[in-house]
Length: 124
Image (cartoon, rainbow, N blue to C red; front, top):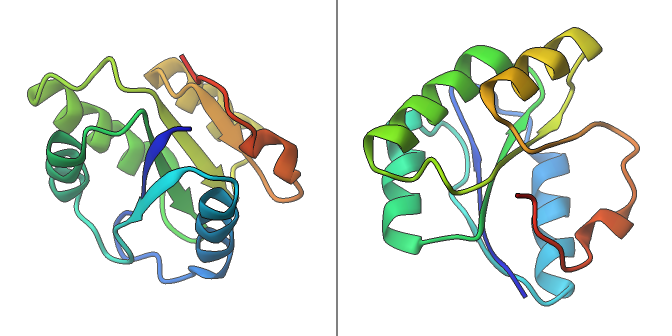
């Protein structure tokens, strides 16, 4: 099973979806660390440096997914973590999805994504 780090970045306080996903992942046998609300990109990257996850997940509902993801990617690169896959979930428009993919985001999970994506897999 995978080690997964999940976080909300910025001032986005909508966490119902991410808490449900965190629980599902744990019940599927993954080791999950949820950092909670109001994280800075540096905090996410530093937690990833310490935890050494197989994948990092960011959740967005009301924040700016592209801007904040780009900042997390930058912080990850500064710490030598650019090989760790980054996935994003939440309210993501098709235009945002294209920009996120250009940043190197490996997978995007939008509302309605089923739990089948929680099966063991690699996002690389």
